[in-house]
Image 1 (tube, rainbow, N blue to C red):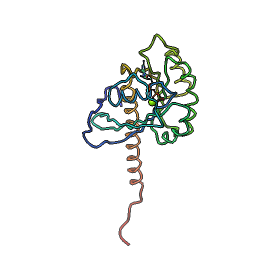
Image 2: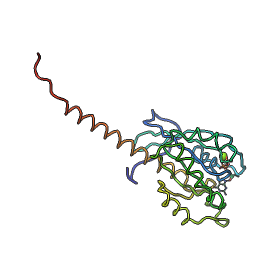
Image 3: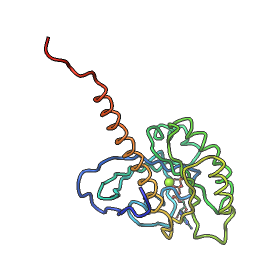
Image 4: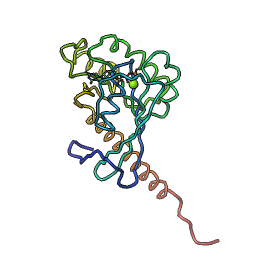
Length: 211
Ligand SMILES: Nc1nc2c(ncn2[C@@H]2O[C@H](COP(=O)(O)OP(=O)(O)OP(=O)(O)O)[C@@H](O)[C@H]2O)c(=O)[nH]1
Ligand SMILES: [Mg+2]
């Protein structure tokens, strides 16, 4: 997969998806997880805060070079009292968006707790994207871009991005980038499997005439 791949977000499903990827959105309360999901799925934004209880899922589709990829997004609750309840939703995730609020340093300082939870509940190949949200509110910024970048590098995460669910900046591109990476990986595994099957068939002893 390259930057020149043709990608488009589908408003309606036109055909059968090639593959489904599960993406969880995690992080402290009120960092903007639900707003990120609504921005990605409906391209809408609301200023009022409605606490998420447990988890909610939504789906959308991206077409990559003619292949339809289904993204199932799980928006989870950030409040501490829901912590044990949300862990069950982490299993089987292909990707996690680990979100903090660039205007609240304490949400950045809690990232280690979320990373440990992800490590406990998911497989090592999960792609973790660090997301610094509320980029539009730069005058109240408490976490610099460099701090986010350093955290991503120190923890070997898949990517780091700053977003604004309010203006939409960076949101959909983050999902597209993840979808492309996951899809490319899947195609690579499929072609490797095909190659292995061929090799096995070639290695089978040829039957000699009948007994
Ligand atoms: N300025 C600004 N405000 C935002 C942004 N994203 C979300 N908010 C506001 O932040 C508040 C919390 O947003 P939510 O998306 O509900 O937060 P959450 O992370 O889902 O919170 P929990 O469900 O409790 O875990 C709301 O008042 C949003 O309007 C953003 O990009 N910029
Ligand atoms: Mg929420």
